[in-house]
Length: 261
Image (cartoon, rainbow, N blue to C red; front, side, top):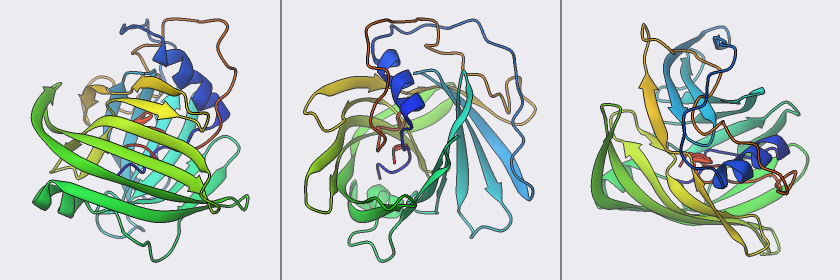
């Protein structure tokens, strides 16, 4: 489901800028190496378009199948999220302000990775609560398109998605639609080309598609500096974007990130 990426103002500005970029490889900035929290093990790093690198890890204190993702831009870590074995979003941390958003108990229609794989379509409807008191509702779907891709040697299946986030009165706050990728074995979503509307009715194109999958022992594992689409500075664009769901900025990203809430 489209539930992986919450935008901070900083992340929103970065993604708006990236929406206008052409694809490119920027010279890497000073390299860093991510160390997950105590009791956790890093298992994959993904370099994506839209100037994002994500580090994925699991923790011994979590339930089986749960996993975390930490997202970095050129300024450092800006987002962290946790999903369960159904790729259902559980919680996210918007950094550095540390606004925490959690899935409300007893969702009306829980997101289900298993249902997506078995039937080709999964709908979802659930509530979100932030620790600043904001409460919202999300409705949408994911659907397999039947198309398959290989990115950096990883087999991926394409999905199409759409979601709408509203306040409790039904006013539209955010919408996203487009495509993402899934890997059935990893049981996770990756951002793809999509459009995002921050509530004003104007859809902006985004693409946080993965470019490199990096595993333990390979160069670039645990990297904290993104390398794709980071090479343009644009003027005259908004200095911030309202926080909220993004396409897996899949997002993303993304995204953003199925990789999105």
